[in-house]
Image: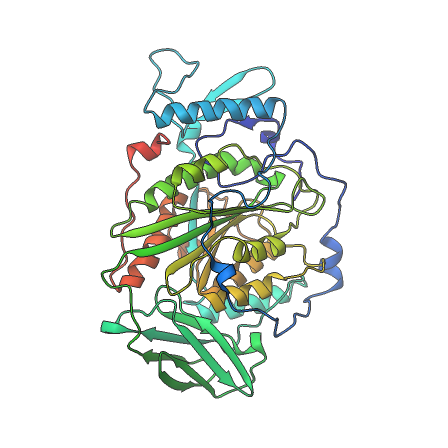
Length: 487
């Protein structure tokens, strides 16, 4: 990602209470200038090993963390003025959490400043911008599994552009729905699909579904034997099938929920960091207020790129929202010498390093917030396509949230991740004319409802929990006055 950006590059926003983006760094990135322009001309697709070796989760993979916190070294702070700004922000956040008025340099008659009001530090002065309070991020989302034919048509048009990607062909997708006791969704159930000496194990998500993609596993043309919980049926390519079992469901029980934020922390994201911090802070608080007994844990993986201050940093799952807030409150976006970033490595770490609970025990969600594609031309130990299959094997949904600067390549990758794991593709809209999608997107304004980003993310989480319980879509809890003030 480019480190040269809009005029906001020279402004350092005081960090309010919690951040979703990551990692302070005082150094500029090394002179890495791997361009995607050459890639776009030279090749259209890269071959992908159709059958990666993905070990099943072990006790070590899913063991509870002995101590919630950074699993690597804590990301370094920035230096100089950035540190001073960050420390001032932390002081303001602490004052807000104690329900104290935040100190502002405004006339006494002016409205009180909240955590949602922008406070910008320049080299020479402090400037307050109350209008920033109204500039909340907005977003839309689409479900490419619901509009699957349109998605296939979009893919065909995309490949006509000659842009390289790692590809898993979703053609022939089979949707399997598993119900358990009382006809409710059987979340986390193992579904085995077999044909032509190929056997694939998948885990259902909160709504009791899995999506099997024959081309992704070189499974041939079928027919396919589909089994789960002692029930079995056959399916042809392109079909949807249902299995009724006696597997246990989440009815009347406390629901466990693991939510991990996978965050691009390179320099081109800094113009959105302030708003995103506020958004995720509100999301974190509101998730805790979703109706019903919900055992929520939050975690985060940050990433940049090779040659930057760090490649990835992971903060393990914690049920302590204050600890989560404090871990993120001081980090900033920096580095990034070219557009693509280390998304391959970051997604692999996000799925393997934190102490995820078993699919049969918890709803598992990843929210990827980014504006750039992975380094497609770089050889990596675990390509993101392997991570897609790993997520499907474990019942983890990946919700990409594309930010400003998203191009055609990034949109395609993000929609791959969402479609393959059964999630929705989310994109910032900013209201008028600022939608964060590629120039060749097929998404029309009539295809989505525009909401504030925090409303949208909380609604997506609430819908997952509602599906698990077999109830109608739950309305997300309203933003409270405490959330608006960062308490």
